[in-house]
Length: 121
Ligand SMILES: [Zn+2]
Image 1 (cartoon, rainbow, N blue to C red):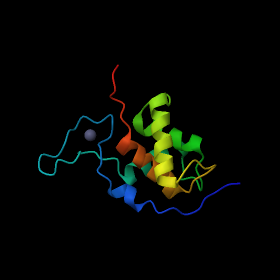
Image 2: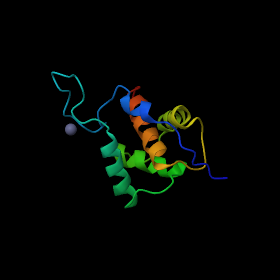
Image 3: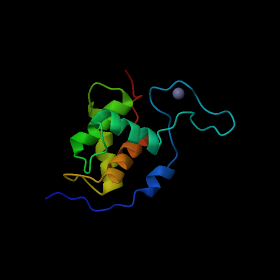
Image 4: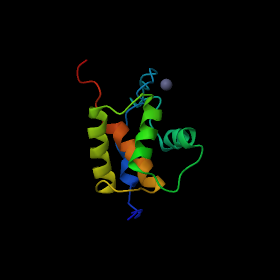
Protein backbone atom coordinates (compact mmCIF):
# COMPACT_ATOMS: atom_id res chain seq x y z
CA UNK A 1 0.00 0.00 0.00
CA UNK A 2 1.32 3.40 -0.91
CA UNK A 3 2.03 5.56 2.08
CA UNK A 4 2.23 9.30 1.57
CA UNK A 5 1.50 10.46 5.12
CA UNK A 6 2.57 14.00 5.78
CA UNK A 7 5.77 14.10 7.78
CA UNK A 8 7.16 17.16 9.53
CA UNK A 9 10.45 17.76 7.76
CA UNK A 10 11.07 21.39 8.71
CA UNK A 11 13.89 20.42 11.10
CA UNK A 12 15.92 19.01 8.20
CA UNK A 13 16.17 22.43 6.57
CA UNK A 14 17.65 24.03 9.67
CA UNK A 15 20.37 21.40 10.15
CA UNK A 16 24.00 22.56 9.90
CA UNK A 17 24.60 22.55 6.18
CA UNK A 18 27.36 21.32 3.94
CA UNK A 19 28.07 22.73 0.52
CA UNK A 20 27.37 21.01 -2.74
CA UNK A 21 29.86 18.15 -3.11
CA UNK A 22 31.15 19.33 -6.48
CA UNK A 23 31.51 22.98 -5.52
CA UNK A 24 34.95 24.47 -4.89
CA UNK A 25 33.76 27.95 -3.96
CA UNK A 26 34.74 27.43 -0.33
CA UNK A 27 33.13 29.15 2.63
CA UNK A 28 32.00 32.68 3.28
CA UNK A 29 34.77 34.21 5.42
CA UNK A 30 32.25 36.05 7.60
CA UNK A 31 29.52 33.47 8.17
CA UNK A 32 31.72 30.34 7.64
CA UNK A 33 28.77 28.94 5.71
CA UNK A 34 29.37 27.16 2.40
CA UNK A 35 28.84 29.54 -0.50
CA UNK A 36 26.75 27.02 -2.40
CA UNK A 37 24.54 25.28 0.09
CA UNK A 38 22.27 22.37 -0.68
CA UNK A 39 19.07 24.40 -0.41
CA UNK A 40 15.45 23.48 -1.03
CA UNK A 41 15.67 25.48 -4.26
CA UNK A 42 18.73 23.58 -5.48
CA UNK A 43 17.09 20.24 -4.73
CA UNK A 44 13.85 21.30 -6.45
CA UNK A 45 15.92 22.36 -9.48
CA UNK A 46 17.58 18.94 -9.54
CA UNK A 47 14.21 17.19 -9.28
CA UNK A 48 13.00 19.21 -12.26
CA UNK A 49 16.15 18.38 -14.22
CA UNK A 50 15.85 14.68 -13.38
CA UNK A 51 12.11 14.26 -14.04
CA UNK A 52 11.00 17.36 -15.98
CA UNK A 53 8.39 17.96 -13.29
CA UNK A 54 7.90 17.63 -9.53
CA UNK A 55 6.35 14.14 -9.16
CA UNK A 56 3.34 13.77 -6.84
CA UNK A 57 5.10 10.91 -5.10
CA UNK A 58 8.65 9.60 -5.06
CA UNK A 59 9.78 5.98 -4.91
CA UNK A 60 13.08 5.05 -3.26
CA UNK A 61 14.46 4.75 -6.79
CA UNK A 62 13.30 8.29 -7.56
CA UNK A 63 15.07 9.64 -4.48
CA UNK A 64 18.26 7.82 -5.53
CA UNK A 65 17.96 9.38 -8.98
CA UNK A 66 17.76 12.89 -7.51
CA UNK A 67 20.78 12.17 -5.30
CA UNK A 68 22.79 10.96 -8.30
CA UNK A 69 21.83 14.03 -10.28
CA UNK A 70 22.57 16.44 -7.44
CA UNK A 71 25.83 14.75 -6.52
CA UNK A 72 26.87 14.21 -10.15
CA UNK A 73 27.60 10.53 -9.49
CA UNK A 74 27.13 7.63 -11.95
CA UNK A 75 25.77 5.18 -9.39
CA UNK A 76 24.81 4.68 -5.77
CA UNK A 77 27.78 3.20 -3.92
CA UNK A 78 27.34 1.02 -0.81
CA UNK A 79 28.35 4.00 1.38
CA UNK A 80 25.72 6.18 -0.32
CA UNK A 81 23.08 3.43 -0.01
CA UNK A 82 23.75 3.15 3.71
CA UNK A 83 23.57 6.93 4.13
CA UNK A 84 20.32 7.04 2.16
CA UNK A 85 18.82 4.39 4.42
CA UNK A 86 19.90 6.42 7.46
CA UNK A 87 18.36 9.58 6.00
CA UNK A 88 15.09 7.89 5.02
CA UNK A 89 14.81 6.49 8.53
CA UNK A 90 15.60 9.84 10.15
CA UNK A 91 13.27 11.89 7.96
CA UNK A 92 10.42 9.53 7.08
CA UNK A 93 10.62 7.16 10.03
CA UNK A 94 11.62 4.23 7.83
CA UNK A 95 11.60 2.90 4.30
CA UNK A 96 8.24 3.35 2.52
CA UNK A 97 6.95 2.53 -0.92
CA UNK A 98 6.53 6.19 -1.73
CA UNK A 99 7.10 9.64 -0.28
CA UNK A 100 5.45 13.00 -0.82
CA UNK A 101 7.68 15.63 -2.49
CA UNK A 102 8.42 17.53 0.74
CA UNK A 103 9.57 14.35 2.46
CA UNK A 104 11.58 13.16 -0.56
CA UNK A 105 13.39 16.48 -0.89
CA UNK A 106 14.08 16.52 2.86
CA UNK A 107 15.62 13.03 2.55
CA UNK A 108 17.93 14.36 -0.19
CA UNK A 109 18.82 17.32 2.04
CA UNK A 110 19.46 15.13 5.09
CA UNK A 111 21.59 12.79 2.98
CA UNK A 112 23.60 15.72 1.63
CA UNK A 113 24.18 17.00 5.17
CA UNK A 114 25.26 13.71 6.66
CA UNK A 115 26.89 11.43 4.07
CA UNK A 116 30.64 11.06 4.36
CA UNK A 117 32.29 9.96 1.13
CA UNK A 118 35.79 10.92 2.22
CA UNK A 119 36.73 7.68 3.90
CA UNK A 120 39.83 6.50 2.13
CA UNK A 121 40.47 5.82 -1.57
ZN1 LIG B 1 30.10 26.98 -5.99
